[in-house]
Length: 330
Image (tube, rainbow, N blue to C red):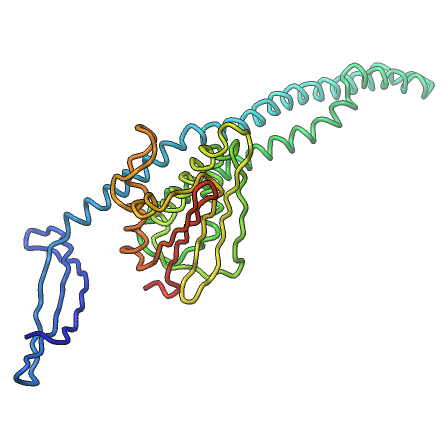
C-alpha cells in the first residue's frame, strides 16, 4: 500500500549505557495509505559501528601498503640531498680551519715583520701566505658549498613536510583543504616511483576553491591512481626506454571540483574497465597488488564524499580518471 515513499536517512553517534560509542544509521520512510490521506512514518535503526570500523581499517591498511611501496624511494630521495649537506659540511669545516690558520699567520706576520721598511716586501710575504692557504679558491668555493648545503636542506625539508602533510593526524576529519597543494605533496613523496619512467605535468586551476573533504583519504586515492598510472606506463614502454607522461589537472565542472589523472600507459580493454572497482580484482601479477586500491578509492569518493569517479581508457593509448568532489561539500 505504500505509494510515493519519501526515503531519508542520517547517521548519528550515540553513547550506550556502558559508555560504548555506537554509530547508528537511521532510515525513515513515509507511507501513505490508499484509503485515506493519513501518512505514517516508519523508522529503522541499524548499528553500523563494526562496518565503519572495518572500512576504516581496510582503508588504513591500503594506505600503509602504498606508503610501504614508496618507503625505499623516499629514503633514496632524502639520501641524495643529505649527501650534499654532509660533503659540503666537511668541506666547510676544512675551509674554516684554513681560514683560522690564515688569520693567525697574518697576526703573526704583522708582529714579526712590523719593522720592514718597504711595502713590496710586505706584499710578497702576504701573497705567499695567500697561496699557502689557497685563499682565492676558498673565496670562490665557500659560497657554493653553503648554497649547495642549503639546497640539500631545503629538499629534505620539502620531502619531510610532504610526508607530514600526507600523514596528517587529523586528515580523516573533513575540513576545507587545498587540492592543488595535495597534488604537489603527492608528487614529492612519489617522485622516486616514477621519475625514471615518466614526466608529470601539472595543469592546476590557480583559483580552485578550498574543498571540504577528508584530505587524508583524498591523498590516498590520488596516490593510488598515480602509482597505477606509473605501472601502466612502465608496462607499455618497458622495452623501448621511452618516457611516459602523466598529466594532473584540476578544474571546475558544474558543481564539482575535478581532479583529472591522465596517463599514456597500456590502457584497459572494456572487459577490464567494467571490473576495475570490484574488490580484489587486479590485472597485476602476484605480489604487485591486492586489487583493493580502486575499490577503496571508489568507496572514499562515492560514499564518503558524495562525489563521482569517471574513467575512460583505450588499449595502448592510456587512461583518464576523473575524481569529482562537490564544491559545496555535501
